[in-house]
Image (cartoon, rainbow, N blue to C red; front, side, top):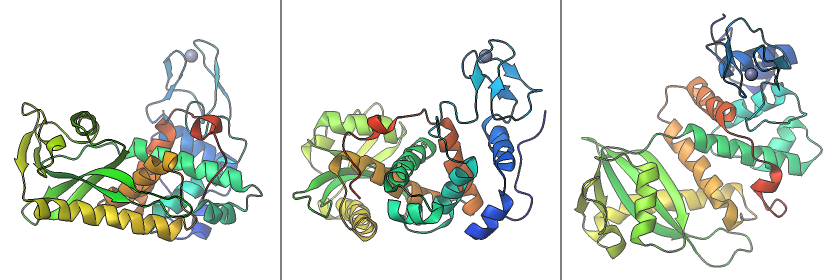
Length: 304
Ligand SMILES: [Zn+2]
């Protein structure tokens, strides 16, 4: 059995360097094979492990006979595009600051279809949510605020957010955000269960929705209104600015969670050591995420 591959030289700093490193489909295939199955090929149908299996485009399980490819059951499931193009997209998202629109990705990959670029980008945002799965913990501020989605969208969207406070410096650590319609005790409870580790100390505003938090799971301190909301309001306002800057035409509210996931991934992964670590984190999400078809992704056409 071979060890997980590493890039031969220093981590590529430009897209040209990256393309040079992954200049063939075979190299991309081998790289992804050992990233997905570092302890040997594991059949996704019967879980049989074959440590002797060599990388191949299609692998026939020696136990159950099912054919599998590197992309089976990942967000790349069923792709007809070269694997190297997926790797370039992952590098590009992990290595460049800010955020990107589908038009940018269409240009990078020279895709004829805007729809393909838009779908890839949404799938990669799903991978970010899967990869960025550590909950906030320690001292955590919890609050909500509102944003506008820009473009033709009228009205406000409500966002619930959690932010770690790193002691003793007081700087912001990991963040998590989610849209909501109705700020109730249930909304807060579900958000905490998903995004904040039990045992954490929560600083919450006086709003009644935050007063029913389970005291057996969290230590809750009600802060003064202005002090508690300031940090979260700043984070949500930064997200709104980022959204309007990159997606000038606005985004549909049904896709808002994906944009929040990208923003949180970017903010949280900024604490990693370098862009190679961010690349590996995003790649772990790409290889772990179950496939969702474009139909599941949206019932209407792309909006950005
Ligand atoms: Zn099998």
